[in-house]
Length: 133
Image 1: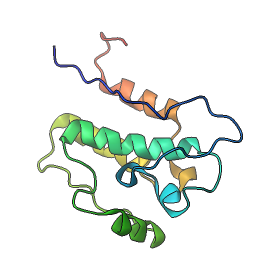
Image 2: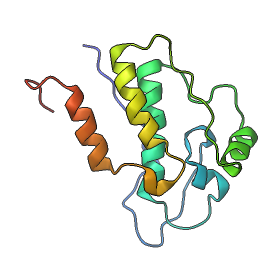
Image 3: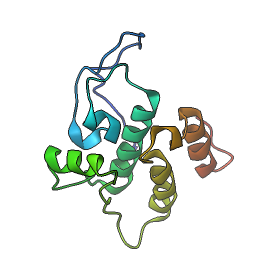
Image 4: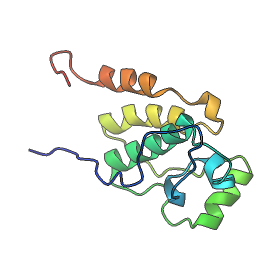
């Protein structure tokens, strides 16, 4: 069956108060991480931003911000703007639902991003009622 599997969580670990970022892939990083990757403990909102980019990739098969290098991504972050994601037109139904989710996950201000619980609730609404996790 066609199932998506997310692997390679080599840097994942339980977060401790003194935790620091252990790595950085610029294309998948939130603006606040791009601007100051050594500022302290990672925030859950930074993970939500990356989750939004991952969702975009999963439903479009396109890397987010394709063609942009780390300097261009940092420049966008410093200017308080988000590069445009290249959504297919017309979008498929799942892509359309995911656009709304990605838009909320990719809010520039960390406080404006949804919680992981809110993301899960949103995604569960996409599924037919007869299906369960």
